[in-house]
Amino acid sequence: GLQLTAWGVHSALAAVGRPASLNDVCVFLPAGFGALAAGFTGLLAWEVTRKPNAAALATAIMAIHPGHLMRSIAGGFDNESIAV
Image (tube, rainbow, N blue to C red; front, side, top):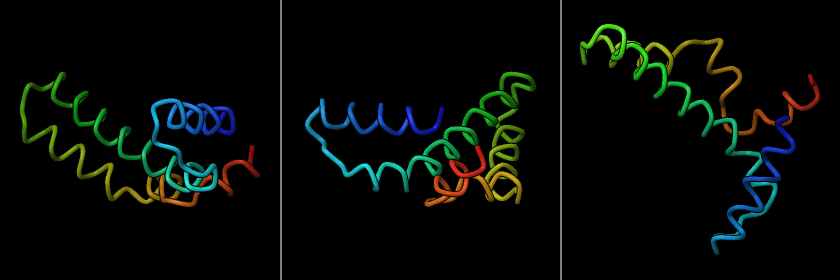
């Protein structure tokens, strides 16, 4: 799961010439996935309603939702890998 994803991102960054430490990848991976989740939520809202305001509101709600924030902050990798 999460550990293999971090290793894959670390390897992919090294392969394209942008090496990063595995620690940095593990710190920023949850925040990156959180941003992707908020963006895809906005796209889903736009697809359903075809209203840009609905998409913006859905994205904003995901950005400040406490349950989403708790699992998508930078450095949250450690807690999640222990919980798994």
